[in-house]
Length: 112
Image (cartoon, rainbow, N blue to C red; front, side):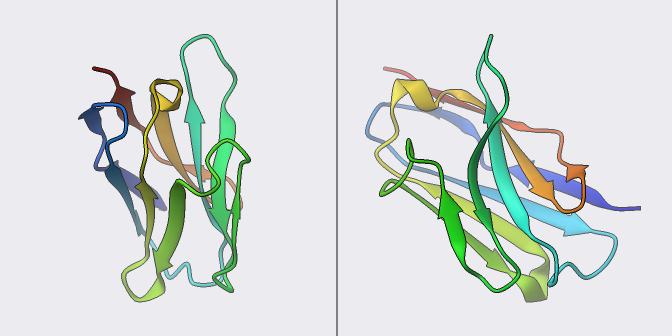
């Protein structure tokens, strides 16, 4: 049974930073691709960033230069460092593991 648990969300002022963590349990996932998605109220879920088993990352244009995705294969974890946060980054952030495993989501709110 694969389980993904996110943490690190919260309320932050514009320009601030947060670091999301996702712990994957159930097996070794070093060969799986991992990603972060987000869903804002009234909008579709969108890809924020993904990281391949090789460690190569890919980012949505809206977060390039501000967010950094990383992974620790020894700990089965993936991280999302979010800097220079904007109100439009407000959303529920979900951890994803291939082929189709999802976490429960963590709320990120950017507001003054």
